[in-house]
Length: 227
Length: 396
Image (cartoon, rainbow over all chains, first blue to last red; front, side):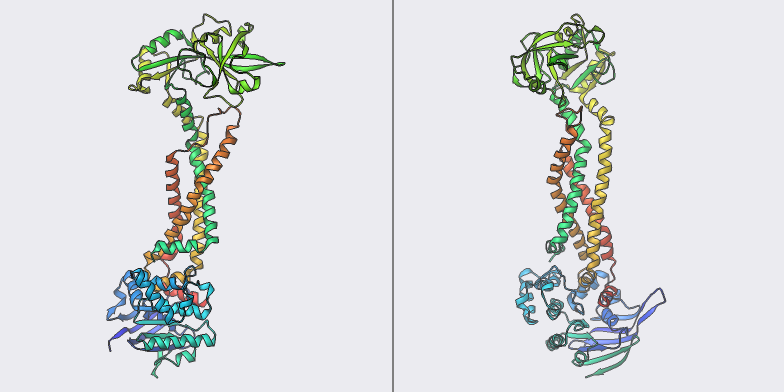
């Protein structure tokens, strides 16, 4: 199957005052449609950096990242933005919803950026909020939602432009166990509906749901196991 | 959702923060607006007073200001000569005399303006009649004198000249024909106007043919400059100034202090406005770095995120700038009243005068402040490393 994204020997080195820190070392990885990949490992092992590079918000210091066979390193900033907008969905541990927008407006934002007509945006937004079980909270602002609800809105936002790849960085990190379970179930459902999902997590319960599990240490993939 | 709408929602859904910013801009904007009104207010008002007199050229004996230098000799012949020039429509001799009248136990000092009763008056009648056709004993008096001495049209009034070395001239009896407003009167001035000859008679100088100045009205098709040039050609020994010359002269000297003060204060207020918005936006941006990085991560371009900040700045400054106008207008009325109450300031002279130009400059300066204020937060947003910010925000 043609990979959505393919990392070829990528490394990422951060220059620091005390000396360079290598967050990724020679990582190669391929993610295809229908994949459900869990990334685990101790703190500071490079999980989030890998996710950022795969999500085109960071560029590798060396190696090559191909997205649908296009070298991401050769793309201009605007083209990378467009790629993220249309092909990639992000879910973060701390949700990062815009506080002045309602749940519906947060979900509508990437669609508007992609140029979707208003009626289509409204329809899609309500569809997504229903999908995550929050249609009744469409007009609520993030400050009026619980942590689990905010994360579900963030997932709806990530799905707004029907991305092929969903990247989730510790999506249950700020949630209690019960709410985390709900989010994990939602990710399962997304995967079942055809979206490739990559989840960085410390939570064994979440990791256990992935079809492939990547273990990282010191910036390297030390183990990759299908489940 | 365009950047404009996103900025609008940011402003309206954070009302406390937005109100703070808008009120701050309104306060400094009001001061800025007032400084712009002050910078040219005196000049505009002075010009208006000169125009209100209905004459656009003044002829005096020397280059000092009228009434401060020597008098024009042989004034009648000079007035006739000037009136005969094709560029001139009308000439009026003006002679000012110091006089006094008995008011209870003390003598009240009065400025007597002598002019040709048949010519167009330099004052505006507000009650009764003008002196034209009423003989040498007719007077018009200003409102202050009328109210203080309880005089009205038909009242009698006795004036004695204060003539320096010629002290001792007998008092002259006058009849008040009307009450008038004089353009350059101060709030406490006691001014009367009567026949030119009466100004001489106050000091017993019945044969003296002098004038403090001649005021000239140019023909509309010739204009003040042409009339002034013609007078200079006809009589090289007199000093001729147009209203424009006078305005420029005052602009360079007497009024320049106000202009300089207004420039300094306008610059300071503009800088405060800039600082206020810059701080507000910078704090706001720094508080929402995670959200901004997320916007970039989910695919909004750098330009879109940056334009959101610029729009937000424009909205805060725009709303504050609009609110500044009524606020500044009210403040200018108040300040104008205070300044005009200073002794020696003509009642009709205003320090703060509105002109459309001030509105345009106000808008331009605030727009510049908005752009400058947005520059630093925009730089933060434009240079924001997405991944590093997300990582930092997640850890914090």
